[in-house]
Length: 496
Ligand code: MN
Ligand code: MN
Image (cartoon, rainbow, N blue to C red; front, side):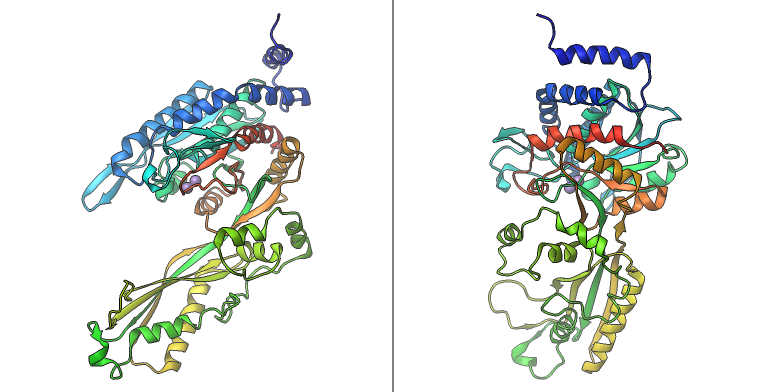
């Protein structure tokens, strides 16, 4: 008996690809790529198992060797599939005063270098969040375990599984002739703020990145079980609001009724920020928010999202809005204000009768296009200063904005997005959910600003993967079909 038909086909097609250098694969070749991916499933899972086994926790300096080892293994695999790799040094990290540790190198890799083909640069990371069985894991976090179609283990979804799916896709398509040049930026410090990465991108702007046409981040989940493409993220302006009264903490028995209390002032001010329906009360905050168009409204209709699941997941009695569209719009395309905590306030159990001398509240405003952080800073400061002066308290009040991260939004009708949507339709036979992140994705904004090229987030994580939590997983379905998604996407990228 000879080899199975598709293996024979694969062999013939591989020979053909040596003769010609196809820019786009034919449908038969695309099928052959998918067959090949199906045949490699066990190997893909085994490789993920090997990668998960390395405890590349970037937050723990004692595990830095494992992070470095992870970068080496990734490099070896990229070399193995025919890439060229530079391990870019990015300096040191001072993790406690006077104690320095070299940062893990960033992988800058290239597969294919044909001037006539577009170049797409993918970003991902090999470090993970901390994980211990004691945290409440059902299985050993660094031992990949397959249960009911899910692959459990730290990093399976964030981000080893997603990067591996991409690398496997590149390897599979390459057998038939890659229609694009692939570049890779893979770092080992993402979970602790990507130290050194921004500078590296700036330094390599005119060298490694000079011919990059598109940037794709492979580090993001879908909204549901339906494939999602992320085209925007909110920014964040984080504020500290300080009120200082006495020079030391006082006792309410001795001083209650005799002094202006800092905490009362602070609570009053916090109460002026947002109403019960979540509306921000600071004048001008909504002025620059991009108006909602009918076309955008349409987008929200087909998104797969359950308010019941959200309510069950959070355990809240009622959500602020009663439709899927309104909830998602308020998560993605409208600003929100949240109060996070009060430093210096008594927060222990029991009944301490203290009058805190100085208290600092922390609150933040999630930014959306086209809000401007420095304008928001002024609006917030003016408003709180007015409110405070109206109150006529002799205490000292100070507002400062400590983070001013801008929102990010891409043109979802641009060629990069069309390619991804076509790929989703081919692999999953459905339209992609066009989604945004309610949180901040600084890397997307920075890549766009530094390189001036379109950025897209095309991930394959499930909405319930618990990337930073206990029992992180990726489903086998997402992992394998996600590999096909990347394989298909590589063939849809248009010439520039
Ligand atoms: Mn990640
Ligand atoms: Mn993460």
